[in-house]
Structure formats: C-alpha cells, structure tokens
Image (cartoon, rainbow, N blue to C red):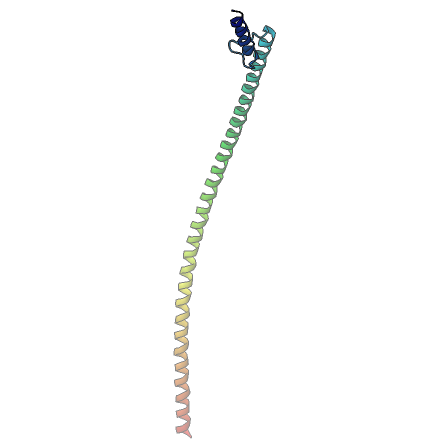
Length: 137
C-alpha cells in the first residue's frame, strides 16, 4: 500500500511538471478584463473613424472629378462645333477658289489660242509682205 501511495504521488508530481495546464485558464482580475475591452473598443472606434475619413475623401474626390469631366465635355463640345464651322467655311471658300482657278485656266487657254492665231496672222502678213516686195522689185 505504501508503494501504491508513493507511485500516486510520483504521478501527481509528474503531471504538475508539465508546462501546459489542462483545464480552464486562471481567472483574470476584473480590472484587466475591463482594460482589454476598453482598448479593443478604442481600437475598433479609431478604425471606424479612419474608414469614415477615407469614405469622405473618396466622395469629395469623386465629386471634383465629375465636375472636371462635365467641364471637359462642354469644352470638347464647343471645340468640335467651332471646328466644324471652320471646316465648312474653308470648304465653301475652297469651292469658290476652285471655280476661280478653273475660270482663270479657261481664260489663259483662250488667250494662248488668240496669241497663236495672232502669231500665225503675223507670219502670214510677213510672208505676204515678202511676196509683195519680191514682185514689186
């Protein structure tokens, strides 16, 4: 019996030597539990405030970008309409210039034909004068 009691004591001391304690953890004092809860609550509150600030900044930037997009859209609309007006004016003006060039080309051809005809007539006159001189002499 003494041997059994000794074995039980030895087993009991071996169980106490293990660093891991089986069973419920030791109870923490109330002050420590409250402090950890307050710290956790403050951490959660600060995270929520940070998230709110990020949302506000993002919303503000979105509104600014929408305003800039509207102004760019209006500027592009004005630019495209003014460019269209200028292109139409140039094409109208270019059409009249083309007509003038065609007209001047036709006049130039007529004058060249008249010049050639005058040169022929001058050549004929010179020939007639030469013939008249030969017969008169």
